[in-house]
Image: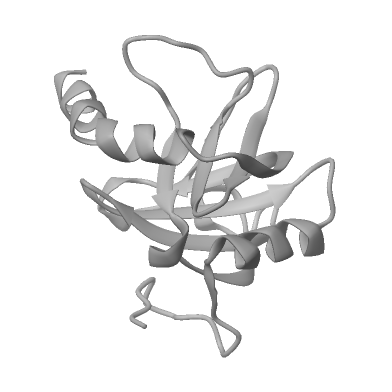
Amino acid sequence: MIRLQLRENRNAPLKQWVRSQPITFSGRALVRKRANGGVGWVDLKSLSGVRLLVREQGIEVSLAPPMDRIMSTAEYLRADEATMWRDSIGWSGSPIARRDCIRLDGTDVNGKIELAISPVDVSMDDAWNALVRAGVIPFTGAPPTDGTYKR
């Protein structure tokens, strides 16, 4: 818990910067996040869902509705430092319960963040286009096989 609080504190300036921008796109999504150390995938879960908020130059993926608590489960990224491609990710990285998604790779103050975002109430193309307009770099070649992608 202390480690999570330290992470939250270090990311506070990025969170404030992202949240200071107007929202240009919003939608509910099913989101999987690569666990620490790059081992497996975990689902972000909430009874009311997970929101993808694309802002002018930033991205916020958070539980909906946002709750002010000591530690958040939100991820904040600078759009111009993120890359994305289309993929299909299953439960915990396995072929079970695969779903089409937008793989979003970026960094925050603490390091690399890998998300698999499957929009629920909007089309995949609408979410993709919103991310491109915000500045995310689309990767259109073969997806990286080792989990890393360098621009």
